[in-house]
Length: 109
Length: 114
Image 1 (cartoon, rainbow over the protein chains, first blue to last red):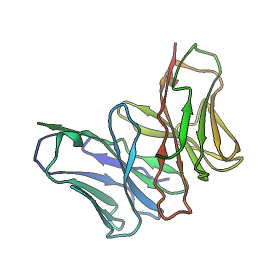
Image 2: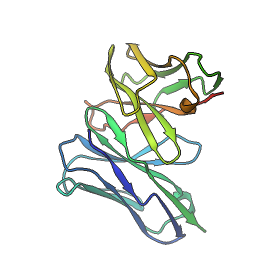
Image 3: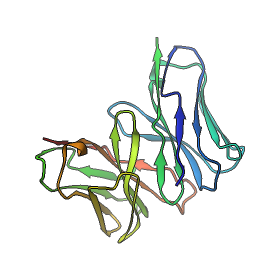
Image 4: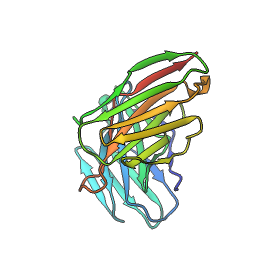
């Protein structure tokens, strides 16, 4: 069972700023690394599922990379908007699926 | 949207009483999970199921039991509720044999133990 660590715990940025968060884990075998976006009073929704070292995924202004050898994944948001305000969770899929504590992003207009 | 519903959506119960939360899916996904959400902890895994009658413990399983007698339903039972079990509970489903193994979440159940 791998421990998933996310940093920072929270982040406040201005509209238009680009930002990134980190998900780290002990390097080991796992099936996939997931990123989810979780808005207040809603349910988490998947952003990306990555399986291979060097994977890069992109959806609009949001992108993610995976480095399994060094045990981290980055999530990038380019030109943050107020609607990007949410908690961003990463999860490791092994025999089960375990989440990090999340990074809470607040984008100020 | 994935067909996954949780019931009840809200419940207030007294310390020491048993409580059962239900998760129902219409997607025929093999895996089902129960998580609890607490400030500063994100989502913590309570129990999960990888098939009918196949379940296993997660990170915070003490005080909880689960059952899965059919593919569609995954029940979470608090045998004797305690105040520390006041939380928001989320059910999730996934299908590891598909191309996309993302998890789909229910709407959550807010449980208050008084």
